[in-house]
Length: 295
Image (cartoon, rainbow, N blue to C red; front, side, top):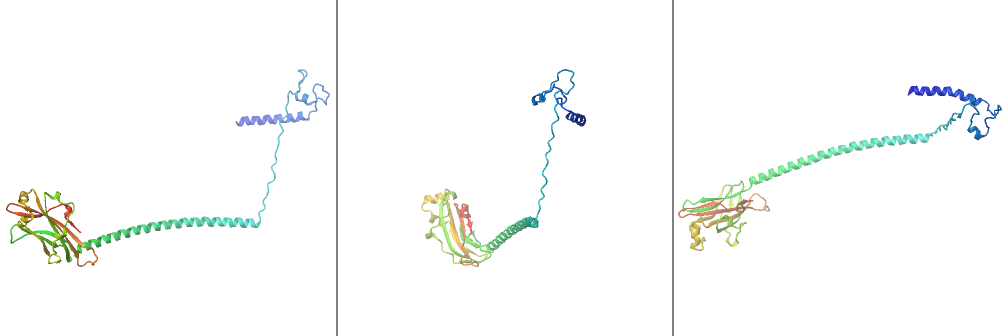
């Protein structure tokens, strides 16, 4: 490519003096040569009369080079007001950028502080919940708990006594004692929830206040009570053959002496099965889970 460009440049250098000489040569018409017409049409098509004419054929002059001159650069004269305005705008841009960066930094700090506050709040909530559970555990540990036990009689055979014992750490006051005796095929035939009749509500034991570790009798039961409960000999025979069973269930409502008066009372639900044999009998805890609960 470089050699070709150099050759073209050399050819132009050779052709340029010849073009200048031809331009300076007088025309054929001025020299008295009638072969060439001076009209524009004839000048556009020059044909020699014979082969001995050595004048150039169809010579085209080189194209004219048009040079466009750029206008002179306009020098803008800035006044001191423009310079002051430009400087003020620059200062405002710098101040705006600094303000934006400070705002972003402040927002990041606020976000971090918010995260710290949320973590502290969650920790405080967890601590409060743990403290509440601990306080409830302490209260539950210190409150009275009345449980039901069965004790056989030492003086009378096949006779049992249902006892209420305070197993808690504070005194309890028994306010209500309800119980019921029913005959059913088995525990699945008992009502889904214990049912009590107000007219059958047992009287409150004479020793209504139970100190920790104290007990009081709730209900005695013996073989003689089976005859009174059965309404016929057929029912009694079915009890003896275990085709039907005798269930005794009840509830005890009591309050904590150390608790405020407006606190709700506590309840203990219990259920027993009387096993009647031909010679010996027994009384054991039985019944669905709904019949055994504490509150």
